[in-house]
View 1: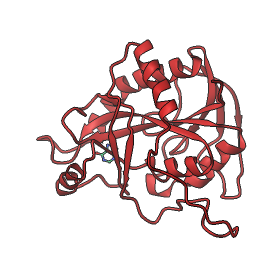
View 2: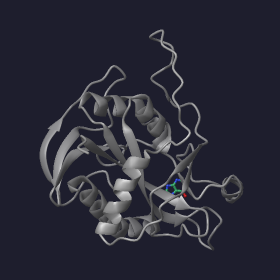
View 3: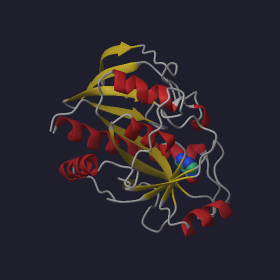
Length: 246
Ligand code: HPA
Protein backbone atom coordinates (compact mmCIF):
# COMPACT_ATOMS: atom_id res chain seq x y z
CA UNK A 1 0.00 0.00 0.00
CA UNK A 2 1.53 3.26 -1.02
CA UNK A 3 0.06 6.36 0.60
CA UNK A 4 1.01 9.99 0.86
CA UNK A 5 1.58 10.08 4.58
CA UNK A 6 1.87 13.00 6.95
CA UNK A 7 2.60 13.39 10.63
CA UNK A 8 0.91 15.97 12.81
CA UNK A 9 3.01 16.56 15.90
CA UNK A 10 1.75 17.80 19.23
CA UNK A 11 3.26 18.75 22.58
CA UNK A 12 6.85 17.50 22.58
CA UNK A 13 6.97 17.26 18.81
CA UNK A 14 6.59 20.82 17.51
CA UNK A 15 9.70 20.42 15.46
CA UNK A 16 11.73 17.43 14.50
CA UNK A 17 15.33 17.53 15.75
CA UNK A 18 17.58 15.29 13.70
CA UNK A 19 15.46 15.56 10.57
CA UNK A 20 16.51 17.08 7.28
CA UNK A 21 13.97 19.70 6.14
CA UNK A 22 13.62 19.23 2.37
CA UNK A 23 11.17 22.09 1.87
CA UNK A 24 8.61 24.24 3.69
CA UNK A 25 5.38 25.60 2.25
CA UNK A 26 2.98 28.26 3.52
CA UNK A 27 -0.45 26.89 2.70
CA UNK A 28 -3.71 28.85 2.67
CA UNK A 29 -7.10 27.17 2.81
CA UNK A 30 -10.70 28.36 2.69
CA UNK A 31 -10.69 27.98 6.51
CA UNK A 32 -7.55 30.09 6.96
CA UNK A 33 -3.91 29.16 7.50
CA UNK A 34 -2.79 25.95 9.22
CA UNK A 35 -0.86 26.08 12.49
CA UNK A 36 2.55 26.23 10.80
CA UNK A 37 4.42 25.83 7.53
CA UNK A 38 3.99 22.41 5.99
CA UNK A 39 7.42 20.80 6.03
CA UNK A 40 8.64 17.94 3.91
CA UNK A 41 11.23 16.15 6.01
CA UNK A 42 13.52 13.15 5.87
CA UNK A 43 14.25 11.18 9.02
CA UNK A 44 15.90 7.77 9.38
CA UNK A 45 15.21 6.87 5.74
CA UNK A 46 11.57 7.99 5.80
CA UNK A 47 10.28 10.99 3.84
CA UNK A 48 6.99 12.64 4.77
CA UNK A 49 5.06 15.84 5.40
CA UNK A 50 5.08 17.28 8.89
CA UNK A 51 2.77 19.82 10.52
CA UNK A 52 3.24 21.24 14.02
CA UNK A 53 -0.28 21.23 15.50
CA UNK A 54 0.49 23.89 18.12
CA UNK A 55 2.56 25.99 15.74
CA UNK A 56 6.29 26.48 15.69
CA UNK A 57 7.42 26.95 19.28
CA UNK A 58 4.10 25.67 20.69
CA UNK A 59 2.13 28.96 20.76
CA UNK A 60 -1.40 27.73 19.94
CA UNK A 61 -3.38 26.14 22.81
CA UNK A 62 -5.57 23.09 22.04
CA UNK A 63 -8.93 24.94 22.00
CA UNK A 64 -7.59 27.65 19.66
CA UNK A 65 -6.10 25.37 17.00
CA UNK A 66 -7.66 25.83 13.56
CA UNK A 67 -8.30 22.11 13.09
CA UNK A 68 -10.22 22.64 9.86
CA UNK A 69 -7.36 24.60 8.28
CA UNK A 70 -4.85 21.94 9.36
CA UNK A 71 -6.81 19.06 7.85
CA UNK A 72 -7.77 21.06 4.74
CA UNK A 73 -4.10 22.01 4.18
CA UNK A 74 -3.01 18.37 4.42
CA UNK A 75 -5.81 17.32 2.05
CA UNK A 76 -4.74 20.01 -0.44
CA UNK A 77 -1.20 18.64 -0.24
CA UNK A 78 -2.51 15.24 -1.35
CA UNK A 79 -2.22 13.51 2.03
CA UNK A 80 -4.30 10.35 2.34
CA UNK A 81 -2.93 8.94 5.60
CA UNK A 82 -2.24 10.98 8.72
CA UNK A 83 -0.47 9.88 11.88
CA UNK A 84 -1.16 12.04 14.89
CA UNK A 85 1.28 12.26 17.78
CA UNK A 86 -0.30 13.00 21.17
CA UNK A 87 1.10 13.59 24.64
CA UNK A 88 -1.56 12.38 27.07
CA UNK A 89 -2.31 11.73 30.71
CA UNK A 90 -2.80 8.15 31.88
CA UNK A 91 -6.04 7.00 33.52
CA UNK A 92 -6.43 3.21 33.60
CA UNK A 93 -3.98 0.81 35.21
CA UNK A 94 -1.84 -0.16 32.22
CA UNK A 95 -1.37 3.41 31.00
CA UNK A 96 1.38 4.56 33.31
CA UNK A 97 3.86 7.34 32.56
CA UNK A 98 6.15 6.46 29.66
CA UNK A 99 3.75 4.00 28.01
CA UNK A 100 3.16 4.37 24.27
CA UNK A 101 -0.35 3.59 23.04
CA UNK A 102 -2.01 3.19 19.67
CA UNK A 103 -5.53 4.19 20.76
CA UNK A 104 -8.59 2.56 19.20
CA UNK A 105 -11.49 4.66 20.52
CA UNK A 106 -12.42 8.22 21.47
CA UNK A 107 -14.79 9.96 23.86
CA UNK A 108 -15.22 13.61 22.92
CA UNK A 109 -15.72 16.08 25.79
CA UNK A 110 -14.72 19.19 23.83
CA UNK A 111 -17.07 22.07 23.09
CA UNK A 112 -17.22 25.20 20.97
CA UNK A 113 -14.60 24.13 18.44
CA UNK A 114 -15.15 24.49 14.69
CA UNK A 115 -15.55 20.77 14.24
CA UNK A 116 -16.97 19.99 10.82
CA UNK A 117 -16.57 20.69 7.11
CA UNK A 118 -20.27 19.83 6.76
CA UNK A 119 -21.68 22.85 8.60
CA UNK A 120 -24.41 23.45 6.03
CA UNK A 121 -22.72 26.53 4.56
CA UNK A 122 -22.32 24.90 1.15
CA UNK A 123 -25.79 23.38 1.18
CA UNK A 124 -24.35 19.93 1.86
CA UNK A 125 -25.33 17.90 4.92
CA UNK A 126 -23.41 14.70 5.49
CA UNK A 127 -23.16 12.39 8.48
CA UNK A 128 -19.94 10.38 8.42
CA UNK A 129 -19.76 6.97 10.03
CA UNK A 130 -17.46 7.33 13.05
CA UNK A 131 -18.03 4.03 14.87
CA UNK A 132 -14.31 3.32 14.72
CA UNK A 133 -12.62 6.72 14.70
CA UNK A 134 -9.12 5.42 13.94
CA UNK A 135 -8.16 3.62 10.73
CA UNK A 136 -7.57 -0.03 11.57
CA UNK A 137 -5.24 -0.37 8.61
CA UNK A 138 -3.01 2.51 9.71
CA UNK A 139 -3.13 1.29 13.34
CA UNK A 140 -1.85 -2.10 12.18
CA UNK A 141 0.95 -0.47 10.22
CA UNK A 142 1.98 1.48 13.32
CA UNK A 143 1.81 -1.65 15.48
CA UNK A 144 4.00 -3.58 13.01
CA UNK A 145 6.43 -0.67 12.97
CA UNK A 146 6.66 -0.65 16.78
CA UNK A 147 7.40 -4.40 16.74
CA UNK A 148 10.07 -3.83 14.03
CA UNK A 149 11.60 -1.03 16.08
CA UNK A 150 11.50 -3.22 19.20
CA UNK A 151 9.47 -0.68 21.16
CA UNK A 152 6.81 -1.82 23.63
CA UNK A 153 3.31 -0.40 23.22
CA UNK A 154 -0.33 -0.91 24.14
CA UNK A 155 -2.37 -1.78 21.08
CA UNK A 156 -5.58 -0.15 22.33
CA UNK A 157 -6.82 2.73 24.44
CA UNK A 158 -9.91 4.88 24.77
CA UNK A 159 -8.80 8.51 24.41
CA UNK A 160 -10.86 11.11 26.33
CA UNK A 161 -10.57 14.48 24.62
CA UNK A 162 -11.01 17.38 27.05
CA UNK A 163 -11.30 21.05 26.26
CA UNK A 164 -8.29 22.42 28.13
CA UNK A 165 -6.07 24.25 28.24
CA UNK A 166 -6.23 23.53 31.98
CA UNK A 167 -5.66 19.99 33.15
CA UNK A 168 -8.52 18.09 34.80
CA UNK A 169 -9.66 17.99 38.41
CA UNK A 170 -9.27 14.71 40.31
CA UNK A 171 -13.07 14.32 40.21
CA UNK A 172 -13.10 14.78 36.45
CA UNK A 173 -10.45 12.07 36.06
CA UNK A 174 -12.59 9.73 38.24
CA UNK A 175 -15.52 10.43 35.97
CA UNK A 176 -13.41 9.84 32.84
CA UNK A 177 -12.32 6.50 34.36
CA UNK A 178 -15.97 5.54 35.00
CA UNK A 179 -16.69 6.40 31.38
CA UNK A 180 -14.15 3.76 30.33
CA UNK A 181 -11.35 6.06 29.21
CA UNK A 182 -7.71 4.90 29.35
CA UNK A 183 -5.94 8.14 28.44
CA UNK A 184 -6.76 11.85 28.35
CA UNK A 185 -5.59 14.59 26.01
CA UNK A 186 -6.92 17.74 24.39
CA UNK A 187 -6.39 17.46 20.65
CA UNK A 188 -7.72 14.23 19.11
CA UNK A 189 -11.04 15.97 18.42
CA UNK A 190 -12.16 17.39 16.13
CA UNK A 191 -8.97 16.39 14.29
CA UNK A 192 -9.97 12.72 13.91
CA UNK A 193 -13.50 13.40 12.66
CA UNK A 194 -12.35 16.14 10.27
CA UNK A 195 -9.83 13.68 8.82
CA UNK A 196 -12.67 11.17 8.34
CA UNK A 197 -14.82 13.86 6.69
CA UNK A 198 -11.91 14.67 4.36
CA UNK A 199 -11.36 11.01 3.47
CA UNK A 200 -7.94 10.87 5.16
CA UNK A 201 -7.00 7.72 7.08
CA UNK A 202 -6.11 8.68 10.64
CA UNK A 203 -4.37 6.98 13.56
CA UNK A 204 -2.46 8.10 16.63
CA UNK A 205 0.64 7.29 18.58
CA UNK A 206 0.08 8.56 22.12
CA UNK A 207 2.76 8.93 24.77
CA UNK A 208 1.61 8.94 28.41
CA UNK A 209 3.48 11.86 29.98
CA UNK A 210 1.81 12.07 33.41
CA UNK A 211 -0.70 10.26 35.60
CA UNK A 212 -4.16 11.82 35.36
CA UNK A 213 -5.00 14.38 38.06
CA UNK A 214 -5.41 12.82 41.48
CA UNK A 215 -3.89 9.48 40.49
CA UNK A 216 -0.51 10.16 42.08
CA UNK A 217 0.63 11.90 45.25
CA UNK A 218 2.09 14.78 43.26
CA UNK A 219 0.60 17.62 41.30
CA UNK A 220 1.33 17.66 37.57
CA UNK A 221 4.22 19.89 36.54
CA UNK A 222 5.42 20.82 33.07
CA UNK A 223 9.00 20.00 34.17
CA UNK A 224 8.04 16.38 34.95
CA UNK A 225 6.17 16.11 31.68
CA UNK A 226 9.18 17.45 29.75
CA UNK A 227 11.46 14.76 31.21
CA UNK A 228 9.13 12.03 29.94
CA UNK A 229 8.83 13.71 26.56
CA UNK A 230 12.61 13.87 26.16
CA UNK A 231 12.97 10.09 26.15
CA UNK A 232 9.51 8.99 25.01
CA UNK A 233 9.35 11.10 21.85
CA UNK A 234 12.56 9.50 20.58
CA UNK A 235 10.75 6.16 20.66
CA UNK A 236 7.65 7.64 19.06
CA UNK A 237 9.79 9.10 16.26
CA UNK A 238 11.42 5.76 15.69
CA UNK A 239 8.01 4.04 15.36
CA UNK A 240 6.94 6.69 12.84
CA UNK A 241 10.11 6.32 10.77
CA UNK A 242 9.74 2.53 10.67
CA UNK A 243 6.06 2.87 9.72
CA UNK A 244 6.64 5.34 6.91
CA UNK A 245 9.78 3.71 5.50
CA UNK A 246 8.11 0.24 5.47
N1 HPA B 1 -4.87 15.82 30.70
C1 HPA B 1 -5.19 16.36 29.50
N2 HPA B 1 -4.30 16.51 28.52
C2 HPA B 1 -3.04 16.12 28.75
C3 HPA B 1 -2.64 15.56 29.98
C4 HPA B 1 -3.61 15.41 31.01
O1 HPA B 1 -3.34 14.93 32.12
N3 HPA B 1 -1.31 15.30 29.88
C5 HPA B 1 -0.94 15.66 28.62
N4 HPA B 1 -1.98 16.16 27.94
